[in-house]
Image (cartoon, rainbow, N blue to C red; front, side, top):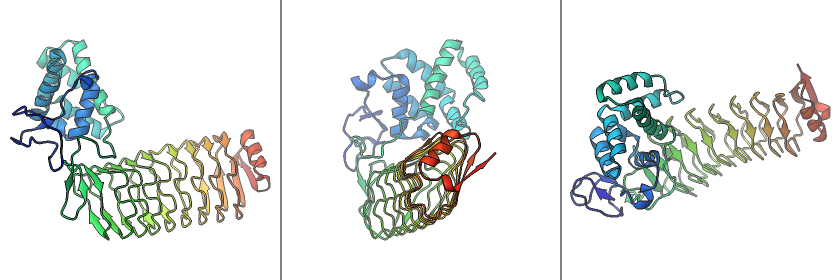
Length: 388
């Protein structure tokens, strides 16, 4: 690390906040070593945001100091970025991105005109400046779900371990109830692994990532509310949470990794966020109390064993977006009576409906000869119903 005020250099250590110098209290930033100097402008900006948070874009003074230090070797880039900061372009683009991440171009023309008038920049330089920030916002360096070298460490009064800047919860403790500190963005991998006494966990509105195996084996966990800031749930995150009976997943979630809710035996109700494009393998495997599930319209594939052993599942309708169903997806769903399969499905794995003893109807759309033949191969010819 290097201080922007006294220029002292140090390594992040236990108890030292990432954002402050241990000598004078000035702002700290990662040193631009020879390896970083070889990275593109966008990658350097992405790492700044990853380390210091996206709210850095609203702090013009601090952002300018960092730009001046990090790009001192390249006066042209430094000047372009400095002009953009003076005109509050990063902060404006951040708000635009937050309001409409699908289309950042809506108000860019007005910004371009304003900057061109005030800074007398040529179109080429103007486009280059905007490109830096737009690429940075569209492809942010995602904060890791593991403790990294520069993270440092801080321990609260209960013994729960955080990174020095408290953006990451590194390791929890096995108590019946815990409230995560506001401002925490990541629950790290294995944070509450096998915390068998944990019943309630309060998650702050700042959280973005839930790491792999973070609550695996929390067999008494009953109460958890996922805030709409969360975008990612890692593999095996809630595996073997036997007491969890319902959970609501906000539409902010874009990725749920494999076996995230495997063997949640009492889970009766759960929704799949509409941005999910793939149901990974083993996601709901052995959720024997799950009674119904709605597959959103963006899902294109369902991985192997995704719903195996969901014995309470009665019916399921697959949207027209689904093209691939993996092997053993509905195996031993002994309560399943009805399923609708759209004509979009072109791949159906082995043993998909094995031991589905109650299955009365498999409804498929006409015109899908491949699907009809495949279902016959799987021994389902007696309960096939075709519709127009």
